[in-house]
Length: 318
Ligand SMILES: [Zn+2]
Ligand SMILES: [Zn+2]
Image (tube, helix red, strand yellow):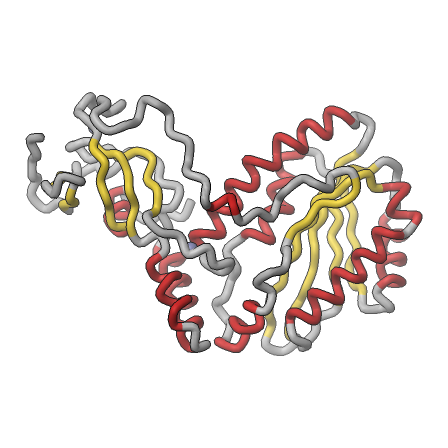
């Protein structure tokens, strides 16, 4: 294949080892993994923390994660279906977190739509539960919180009001107060449940540690689902963490940070298999096929993330 070189442009190698020229306008395909400068800095900060925590191997994996992509591209630099060559799958990795979030939403949302169609008289509500901050180890706090939450779900009040729910657990760390642990629940409510009642019940089952118990109606199901799924999968903000906190967090490795209850039980939302699945390719994009943008033949190429991001036309945080 004939390749052209433009002056002052990055050159990437195609599968055949020949240089591939990038047009001035940059790649036109949408790269869901392109990240902003801020995110790149956050990731190198995370890698530094992991290294200082003594987890050298993990640090290397996180560093390698999404550093290279395989994609289909034409000689004019139009790129399609970029897929990272390697993913670390570490929960705190922002690249893996974002992808996990995207895939989970795509899988869970249709089921919830179907559930709403089946129970048209139910109201969709968003419940938030918090407890007072604690300096105890995170794993202990997590165990305690989930025990209290299970107790809440066993009450007559919960059972008569809530048909099914999806919950996401989140925690933030504050130097002075320790861990702030809380949970966001998207629930299908069968009967009216006044906020003061759920608040006093939450206080009761937590033996006084319960703080906020908020319940509000969700007008748009999509927004509600995004709200809940955002937390267990969102790239955690580790800006003010220390290596010790990384080790504490790793103690939660095998625990679920999201779960389904009641009639929604069985809906799989915390799935590690997700990141294994290859993205679906439309038959139109394959080696030798004409580029949908310019008609030149597509090749399979390996790209460094930097080129993908630079070529993408700047570092906007989308
Ligand atoms: Zn990763
Ligand atoms: Zn093209």
